[in-house]
Length: 437
Ligand code: NDP
Ligand code: HSE
Image (cartoon, rainbow, N blue to C red; front, side, top):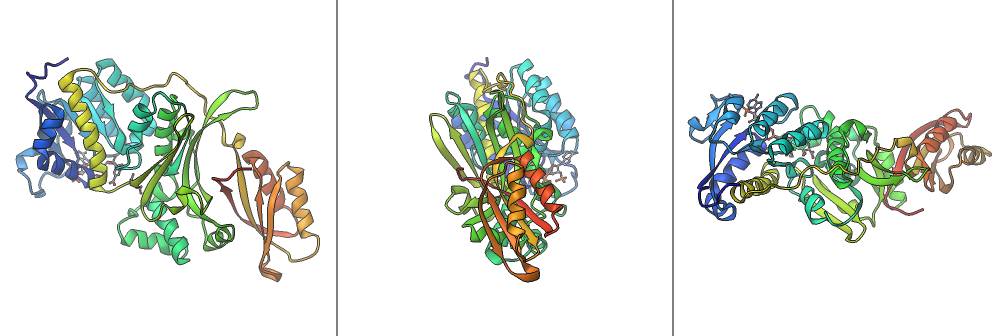
């Protein structure tokens, strides 16, 4: 423990001066007096690591270095803020900081979703903090509520919209009727989608966040590889039309929940996919690039967190919250919560997960089609809730909504439907979330 009276300043190194890092530095400088009062010591910026030191960044050039490792190693650095991104180099820098007894704040979801265990153990062995509020849902406080506010409750589900780019695209497709490619191009023009949008549109970013959420909510280790992942690139305007006919919209959901296996064992499910969501569900009204996370806890009931899930200043807000916590711990002694993985729950395979489904197929418009289709659902033990024909003649489509069934039963049904003479194509299969039955 460090005596507060001896602790006149906390040395901070910021690794990265991009969207997030530049805003972190701005806040440290602009709010220095307030931050000093809140921490009980001055936060002193020791240096900023960037790739290119030749660019004018509007600050004293002496603050910048391209040697992040040397900056981390400086004796007068107490806390390292990692906002460079990427996995290998960031991992090395963070391990080096933790290994020399420095607390770390990071926004790096890609790294955490693969290496939380190793990083948490390094923090543990030196009794320092590893904070990562900004890694999930940007400005929205969700890590701290799960690890601290709900530490005395039992969380059963954490579900939400944790990727702003895809939510922008799906909201725009729903609002305008435009197709996926057009809307993705518009998202790129407006600066929401990156030049290579794969991580967002194929669900990798949301899966990384789901892994982090599942690990902390269920006191287990879940990595990105454990998360079932499907993206949004196959969603069509026709899917939105069908969704509207069912009073639903389509959202890319990250769902983490406790599930029970057939033998009664408790397991964790972590999955990311586009799903139909009833318009009456709170997540349906989360539009544009906003994020929202709904937590279901045994005693607290349903809690909803909503706000900006990305962007320099919103993300820097979450980083700063962590920085203040880590700095207070340096001043007062002690540390924040450790990694909690005592429950060590196994991850349930997707085939065991039960949800409702929406199956859209092109069919030959003639007598007997409906009964042949219904018979396949029945043969695989999948109960139909509603069935509707859309269009006629060559454009005839059957839209089936099921009661809950396992993913395995539904996959087998779809495979069998594809072989039916009357079914020209199964054009889409989406899950229906947020309803009972
Ligand atoms: P940027 O690409 O905008 O910034 C990255 C910064 O890191 C740049 O300043 C770059 O230097 C610097 N950098 C890259 N490589 C090196 C290196 N080898 N040595 C030293 N510096 C280096 O990233 P963001 O600010 O957008 O994101 C940072 C982190 O925050 C990522 O982990 C991201 O996933 C996470 N995050 C970002 C959000 C957002 O909205 N942007 C939201 C939530 C999390 P230079 O300026 O010279 O190129
Ligand atoms: N690409 C991410 C998104 C940034 O669109 O939500 C925030 O993690």
